[in-house]
Image (cartoon, helix red, strand yellow):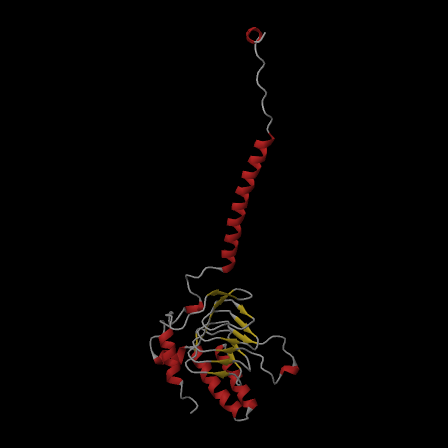
Length: 250
């Protein structure tokens, strides 16, 4: 059935967006949900060989919502696209269940050419993945289940299950969750607020090391100056003292 997952997708929006107040509001006012309606129809046309019709419906969805989803992409259940303006999902992209995308996300390819037309060019997104606003995931690799991609991150290589990636190029900043380890069910924009910037951590470590080395250099300089200082000779004995010494040693 073409729209069998619509109720689940509406409920997913209500569960992840506190601003949503009713199912009717989601249907009428949420471009992310409306983009999925266009995608489901376009994908049906594409799968049944009506490629031009699929592309045309996809284009209508892009004009109406600002979200571009290629009809050949494969999208799982309960996808939530929040705000959505500028989201681009490429032809060979695959998205698992219960994922969240924010505005400006691109699931794209690298070095596109005519020869790559029938090849996998876009990423595969696992289940329960959150991709923050403005993030770019580029290339035919997998983003593991439960991964978090921070806002404005640029991901160019495979992401392990449960990892959190930030930066350009993206770096892993949180260890992967162990099996059975409790993790927050939802992290808006894909970033834990307690996670510090890895570049800031590296710079702080370098500054601490420079301060330690500077203190050690100062200690060595003080020791060198102390060794180089001239030794004071004893003062000459007075004349009466010399006479007493001479009488004591005839």
